[in-house]
Image 1 (cartoon, helix red, strand yellow):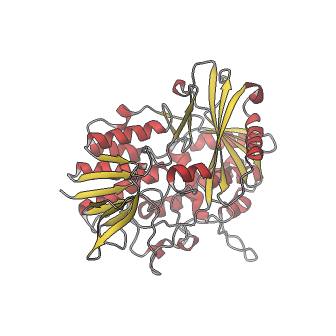
Image 2: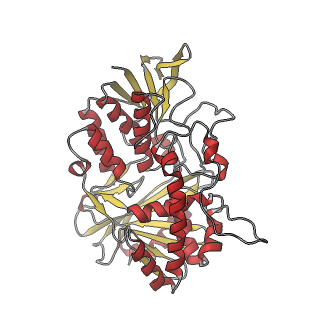
Image 3: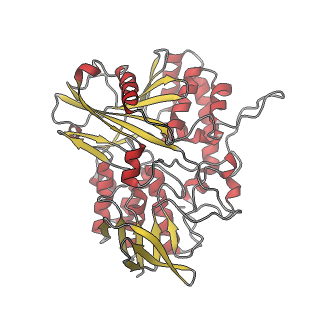
Length: 467
């Protein structure tokens, strides 16, 4: 039985902790904050509740596997999962609206043809066929296996872009796919919104980012009753059932080494904790070797506007609406039909999010007005119904998680600049887990990183991921 120290209590770190505890190791989690969950947070006031991190779950199979491998109760006995249908409503700048069904290729094609005109659905469907090819080429090395020893194998973009012609430059970015292959500004805006929701600028994101809409539209979008914080609660309880120890308010300032191997950590105040292995959920600080992966370039964060409204949610409201406010900008409005998030049936909680550059100056008054104006396009009588609002910016993310950025999932192409740190550190005995490490950010990806780290520690360097 090894002594394992886990730094941080994010979803990826807790997923690794639970798996390692089941394998017979003694696991202690040191979290600098006062609670678990990392960026999966909840804001509550006056009987209203809001997710201030992710609002939906994709690839729930990741957490189903975690609960199967760590206890008798499956995931669905610990949380209530519901497919969101329609998966999303899109309101474009010209007023056009379209509802996209959950995990239905044929339904999506038909909906786009009806809303945007004949041929729009076919072009989107053909795009998804090419996106599937990129997904199939990169699924295992990017999601199910440890990062390749030579990550340059993922430098080449796997998306089979349409030939651009002799006098045109090759298609290398997601924005170029929208312009050249979708050929409708509304379809391009739809594609762009998927990139922005994961923190990527479509103008610079590689064509490989096409796997993001493919993933959502193929495997569906799911909501956890009580809000996504309920998933963090369930993973924390599973860790406790497996006798994982948590120490909150404990800031790790240094990973200790002996004879070239990690041997413990030092806490604020000088206290040291011995360990046979250290698992870090914090952003990696060690330099990357020239032949290894480059640090992931992430410079975007999230603003969240929590709205407490009087009056019940109208009957034809949908869970998620994406409001396309103009070129390169969209706002996501989440309106879950969840009694746990409102004081009674005569009120409603609404969460509005936008991806922003973390280095941009924040004019809070202007930002609130812009978000309210976008939301008013899809929530009737919004301003008359508004009781109060709460704005959260990347500065709040820094205070809660230590970083303003929200890391995105790993993507192939772009010369490897969107590959995060490998799970196995250059220092023996030190591993990385969570959104800043392979396979990157997002609830599903964080859960995958926990499985990969546990596999590498339990099975050693020969571990090759799920089969």
